[in-house]
Image (cartoon, rainbow, N blue to C red; front, side, top):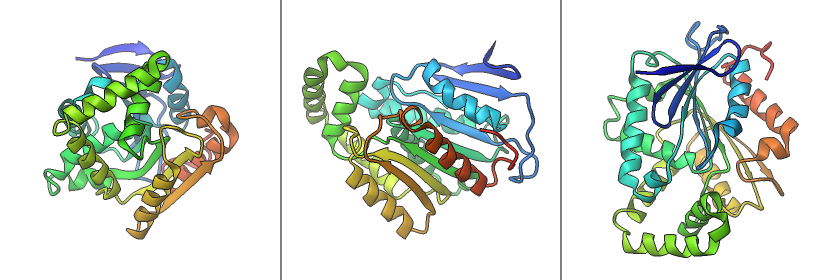
Length: 276
């Protein structure tokens, strides 16, 4: 069952299940991808993101003619990865459902949303032949402020995002927790990281990151980008010397939108007349 509410004029919002929302765009924009099929954006916001914040990105894509599936992440799914895998399996089931099964796909993941997407990829890898069609429907992938680097950066990500007033205490507690429950946490994290580095997706990618982000190691990010390029994936990236974690749109709006627009045009996912 889904509940409906008004999001923007011409857009209907459906609450599909807890943490998963579908914004249905009533304005049909013809694209050259898959004939006239309307593209679907899989948007994975940062941990603790509020609708008001990630709706700014939704508005950009809705104006370009996308429907949007917003999949939020919970801290419990991060701290106990088996639940994260179950969440990823639910997303995979939705993408294969009749409502979405013929749509060309674009993924835009922020911060720890990349971890959630890795859980989707892990579930896909369990039966690569079955999900070959789904894999081929991904036309592009966008990653903004990925939490990447050491386990300590993951702990910093949890503390800064959810408990900034107790950052140091939460960071130490998280590291202790990861140490005690290594088989249930760290081993799963490593599997997700390996899956992301050697992603089965070959669609073109766009990365946004910066040098002053405590949650993202820019050197590791560049190593991964180079690894993807060596595998034949077309990658566009923008690294700022100073910016804001999951806030590059706010800090560098015109450049961010220009890069995003050019990337989508290169995928033929929006008509040239679309205004973002």
